[in-house]
Image 1 (cartoon, rainbow, N blue to C red):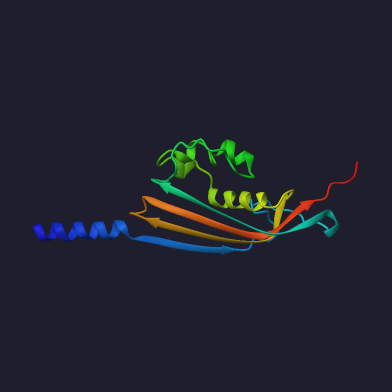
Image 2: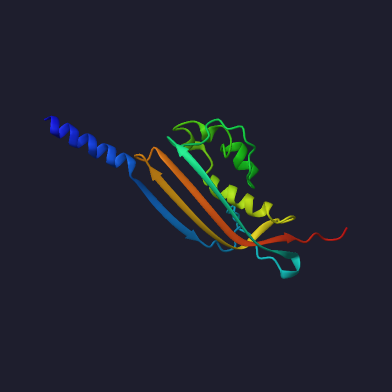
Length: 161
């Protein structure tokens, strides 16, 4: 009986320290990186600023985004989601609750924000390629999601007044 308990203990520890990794790549068409479907713009309506890339990683413990109860400023392009669904706010930093009410893809939002911040005057991205990697560890109690977004930053031309 004692050997069975030891073997089960070793199996639980081994299962708890192993992880699972998923890798996804996507190329959204006619949508902004935030998921908004857009009408095609005429070439005369925008100016391409150049290639840019943004990367961000987000860690979770018990389904809540770390660090818990962070006071860091929200960095997202979707202000409605930030105020109403907890993206970057308090709800997604509460254990177990954060997985239900937190932002859908905070790592992607942060990567988009990072890419646009690197190009002064950029409004959005075109020719977008997204790589997302999720790494689950310790019986799925801890996970990390990292996103990299690559694309061409563009600025919408404003009509002269």
